[in-house]
Image (cartoon, rainbow, N blue to C red; front, side, top):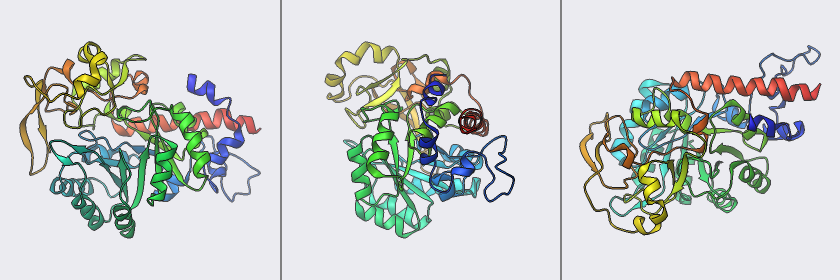
Length: 394
């Protein structure tokens, strides 16, 4: 409701500008090229630069969440008319190659991959040249980089294979750097977003600032707290060409997330998430938005001290790495404050685990198939566009 109310303050002209040149008639539901006196469809479509670039039905992209956005979820989003994105981190290149094959066995629709640009004290660089070589050879539709700016050499190689390149950015400065490196698009991450998140600005403010800086020719997606159709429309109205959806998809049938994690998202209230540096001996002292639990509440006051210490103490549980591949590794111990989110194979003390979630978690009230989530969010968005902004035009 709050998002819809704020939308009333957005002028119709602003929304038309943000849906992309050439897409205005479709965004408002008018049939392009028709001689019907301006008759509008009852459920206007939302054609944007994103949908036209990838041939999508919906301006909806599934966030490339490590451990969770595996082939089943990726394919489900693409089959539902959006763009699924594989969360590559922290899987090594041979596993990544298997994942691509698995996705292509499930869908012939476009999909992307998400590379995490962090360096782990135990694993070294999470993304390496071999990942990029595999992506280039596979002629992927899209590669997204998160938590840093990719090298110009990586961007050039990917684009030479026909692969679009996006960079997730937490600030205007990072947006400028991403475009300077050759990025085709930007995923603007507000501080509301779950998981690893360096943003210090709320999404709508950052969207406006980035759009004003980069102009209207650059593809821009909105990330952070997007869980409803009203969130979609508000993102479009603030300059986005589409939405990047994470937490809502964790609470889906196809997400490779532990049922306890999904249950806690569904039960979350407002203010039940927090950004903390507690989690991550694997990638230490990085800001990470998670659901509050007993471990977070008991230790957040000492987070800077704790994150700088080496991992000690008994494991909080065990998990499986690289599941469903020929490299599957069973019984991997999870150290205290592990940043590894709980997957279906994880066992242990869930109150000691980090469960990434964005601020939009409190709008999520059920776990359902991806096709239903995408359809319901986009139908709500179309209804708002048709019922409010089209009426404003009349």
